[in-house]
Image 1: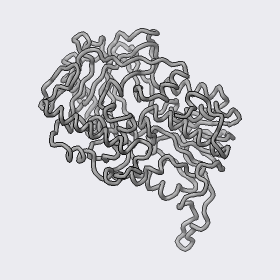
Image 2: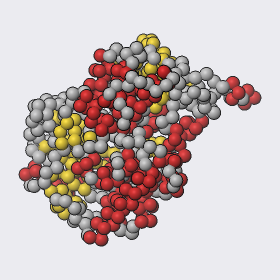
Image 3: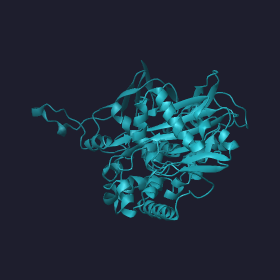
Image 4: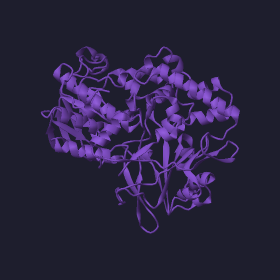
Length: 512
């Protein structure tokens, strides 16, 4: 068992944790930083993968998060700073829409729904834009109507404003299955407004050409790999395959002891000087780290995997039980050619309430983990699709052959019979991945955001928090992870110096 002495220990080597370590190491060379990661790789929920076809040829896929939208300025700056390149998602050609009755429609601009349904969709989108602006992304729990909005399911909120079921299905998809990956009755209108506000507006969420704009050449995990290289070059330590089991972080409050009932002293009422450095010992499988501050850069649904000594204050213990991951299957289907393009289709397809509710052309470009040529698009065609919440549960319950057939048949409903014959097929299963346990991000139970949201970014003693799940701008995106990692690092520097840190670097460390 290795013992490491440092100033700051970061738990988690995803984009948030590595951005925090990078910002610290670059801002203050005298700060010693160590990063502990449970997985055998860096990248967290960004993950370059491969799938073999019947001939044994490996095809590149992005198992986890992959897209960059124009408003994600922090991530865009970091990608440029790290010397990485991006490419635009293919979107030339007609899109396909499946109506509730199963009718297939090919269209170029506006979704082919009735004029009345389109008017209802436009009105609901406008109302959500207004709600997002009212609530904001920074502190939705503090909005004037926070409690009211947080105690009504998003589905019910939409139903109060429209009786057009097709419009409701087509609007709810952008938050429910498309983002939070939970049924629209399982989260609040306030949570939906936060999702919209974090993207700049609800209109951004419904514009797939905006929200799914670009990809990183070589995959989004390349961002974490480059960050890890930078952290190592700046003297930081990154230890993989070492799940954190326990964090000793504070002295107990003797006044909380209840000797007659055998209850030991703890810190149930909180501690003084939240955010200030203290004495921290982090116990992991391969290393014990002694530090002054710890940055917990994992999603909140994994906090309970760690034993805190003493236990966290009661409000944190309760809040963490009301935050959970959604469930989604990301489909990767590789074809000998992008056949849909030959038929004048973009590969983009939608169908509210269907098994596969959205499909996109995900053909690779440039060099990646399985080869490819710089500046050249892959000759193979790749589609990506998504199956969310209860549909995902149904698919995992099926035998593999039936599951594959059902999924490909659902894609063929959009793009025709050729979709039934991929040369390679892969389903991302982040819910079964021990150190993720869901996708894409955590969100609160109904009514939880207005009660506990104010706690999620507040340090607990020397424990700071950083991940995309608790971001404001860029919530549940890599951009949010980068912002949160940077913010946690700058907060550590501020508390260390006792004042605003004057030496934060330009670019990724600059104020927004």
